[in-house]
Length: 191
Image (tube, helix red, strand yellow):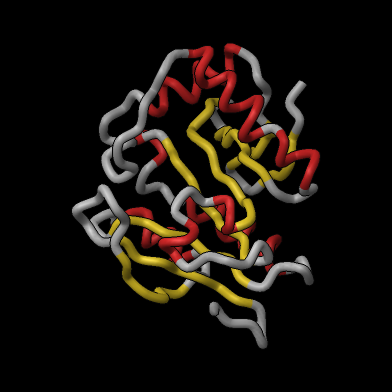
């Protein structure tokens, strides 16, 4: 049984579990150099390392925040895992200080999909729904996201999901500059 969080026309978002099956899906996704091209250096570890990441970093979101977390994204027509998407407090981003994300009421959206899902509008479909969902929460001030500038596929998803370009900045360890996008509720702005 899948613990379904949300459905769109073509996708199902389900909560992850700390099983070998989910850990293997994540390991396989991150093992593709093209998927990881704009992510930067990332130590894969093994299946157990992914289970531990699920257990300690991802699963606690479900209990702490009803509409936050990391969700496995399943394509309905094939019932195949195509990647993941998340909503979390922006202050949980490992580069939050460099990005200037200081308010936990700003929610970060992020995603990572298999190459077979690229260019088909799947990330945009689900990101658009999640941005609307996040901004419908009166406690949320803005939805923010970040990508390296050369990652045009990711920045296009942000734009199509209703986020606007805010500013560029550089992160330590990356040669390419990044760009921040945001969508804020009326009367709110980024600090």
